[in-house]
Image: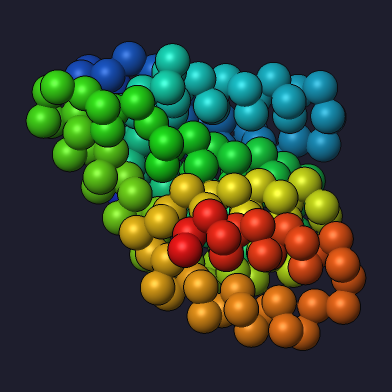
Length: 176
């Protein structure tokens, strides 16, 4: 689940961007702790290293594949991870006058968009918070509407729960 983190030279990234070296340590602690208070503290610390005041950094791109991999496992913090992806996708870098920051945000959205099948699978998750956060992420990624709309329409046809169907219709409307 954390293999992709080993491919990054976090020490070198930390020389450029403070806090980057802590990211793989935080991921390891998050995936191994059983103490809920420690887990919540580590999740907040991870979030603060990846997204700061609505901005992302170069090292933020390197965590996206790991976050997506985590979403394919049964974890108690899946909704949090989907929210992190949504916040990365919505980063304020897009509005930056500096093209480097805007490019970074567009690259993050492309990286997130590579695994649409993971998010579409989460639309039917048993946890309502995971479903809600996932639908928010899909709605944010409007540039992938053509790929997600067809799948969401198929899900809508087979959804018997009216609450879930209403959630799916809301996202279809947002991406249309």
